[in-house]
Picture 1 (spheres, rainbow, N blue to C red):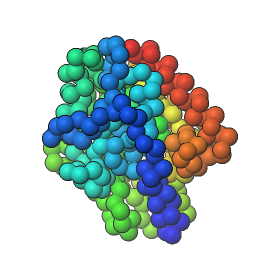
Picture 2: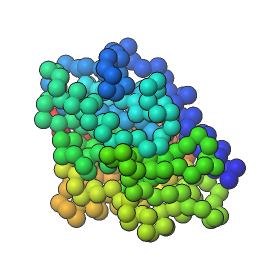
Picture 3: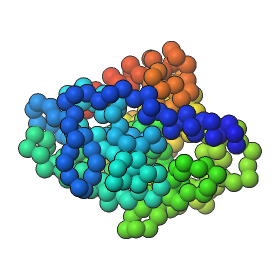
Amino acid sequence: MKKILVAAAAYAAVSMAVPAQASDFNSVQTDQFVADFAPTEGKKYGVLVLGGSEGGKPKDLATKISDMGYPVLSLAYFKEEGLPQELNEIPLEYFDAPKDWLQARADTKDDGVIIVGWSKGAELSLLLASRDPSYKGVMAIAPSSVVWAGILKDWTKIPSSSWTVGGEPMAHVPFAQGVQINSLVDLYEASLKQETFAEKAVIPAENIRGSVLLMSGGMDEIWPAGMMADDVCKRMEAAGGSCSHAHYPDAGHLLNPDYPIGGTDEGNKKAGVDSTAKMKAFLKKLN
């Protein structure tokens, strides 16, 4: 348990290493959601960016997409003033307003948005797209194929589902109890073996209408993103959907040398360069 708590602390501390947001991001003044927005020239699909368990506005990931030349809404869904302080029972309805806000702008296309997320934000991105055909594309770094239990500050407590619909917790995979584990990866892998829960908590990726780009590292120290990404693509491809999976054997959780959650330095550097190129190509194709 001690090793798990240490790894969890490192995971949650990602936000502490995030550099300052670019100056072209400005706070969105609304009481419906908490976000920053960066515009761009030309009329393109707005991009909704979601962070992971670090919480707050996903500054680094949002800046990366903005620097590619796209209008970006950097959205917080917990751990900001006026929002839940823990990633537990977050209402999916909360994400309707920011999506509509992006579509309604004069400088973005009005027939949909693109959604980007990493880690828990990747789980959320796929879940939202599976429920709403207006998402034209999904880019997910370290994705999940199932809905997971939430993440509480006190890992000795049992969380509910990460997400709710209509005020009710969604079916989710709870963390396994009474099993021998030495890391977060062990915990998530053991939890996935709870077949009854896992089957009910599967994200229905076959319902996603937009194109999907998944990216994962083979040395992920959080959860088995590569295996889960393969599961997502299998479900989509069986239904005739468009899904590609870029896997980097020597990279960690976020494919980023600045956040070494697993992987080698060289593996993360190469994955960072290649995944960025793939993201640029994916966005260009959709626009």
